[in-house]
Image (cartoon, rainbow, N blue to C red; front, side):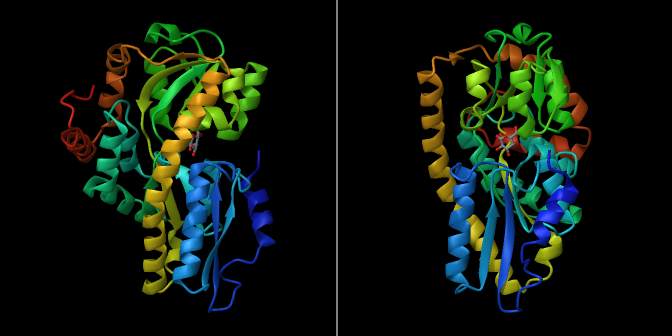
Length: 332
Ligand code: GTR
């Protein structure tokens, strides 16, 4: 596991924007996924666009594959300015910015379209703006589809099948309690440690979307995948507020514009990759449960709503998210 100090040592060898001439700036961008994953390809689009619109003055150096560390650590480094741009999932932000919890709540979205409507609208913008007092500038949301459970022990058809299984979760109290309320034993762990832990049997399973289940090779070790689709926590593109404040408003606008334009590109790549990853998993002969009664899962996580929506502001966000659904089902 790469530590914060190791990441800083690595970055020291790389010319940062501050060391460049006043004319040119190289922004360092982190992503935990490999170079061909939709998030990284979208970052590459953003980099190309930025270079073009700034006539080569602004560029991005992308560090994919978790080279700069795990999301929990790279977020800290971004806050104090060691990384300029960071693509992370919303979950590790839950501990830093409480408002982000509402977009990760179980079953709060009825579909990917519902999630997109919310993050593209005023709620999405308000939550991006809420990052700023915490040292981050929210640039955009990327798709992350829906997260579902997988494991190496047995098929999950109902919450009772999760009972006693050790399930890895992201570093977020919300995910810990969500999994506990379903009867499993939650184990918070960095993304990069999951494969080995599955191999060693120190965990029984995890939860993620189709592309991550496939690209990490977890599907080869944990063959039982059930489309619980319990969370649609999106990906977020954040920038270091420290770096942001060193930039003029014209450069800030170019960065925002490039980030915004990369969203549509990412969504196109994402839909293709979901399809491809699902095909790879099915062709591998995995035991995939696609049709299931989600009601029992929805009911089991009801207590998480009482526990985590602890302020009127958070409850109001969720009311508005639910009102934005074309489906009439109430959240748990
Ligand atoms: C993926 C997400 C990553 C990371 C990972 C995880 O879906 O794209 O940023 O959050 O899940 O489970 O840690």
